[in-house]
Length: 106
Image (cartoon, rainbow, N blue to C red; front, top):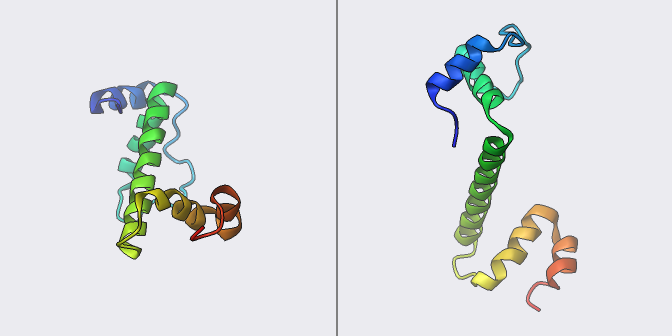
């Protein structure tokens, strides 16, 4: 679970390594205020390894759910047993999916 807003604010104030002038990543959305981005980065820095791992695990699970929803949207009649192969095909290509799960339709 992410730290509270007050924990993030405390971490921001206490971290003497923090440099608000650090260069910006091109991945920062243009509709996000720089102060908000800076606070988010500080919240991530304030997290323990366990908290970061839990966040990463949650994000990976969300990506899997979205990918499976996309597969189901593209193939409404797909069988649950065929989902892992189709997910592998989308992520890694036909050759690796075939190597791992056998040829499609087999």
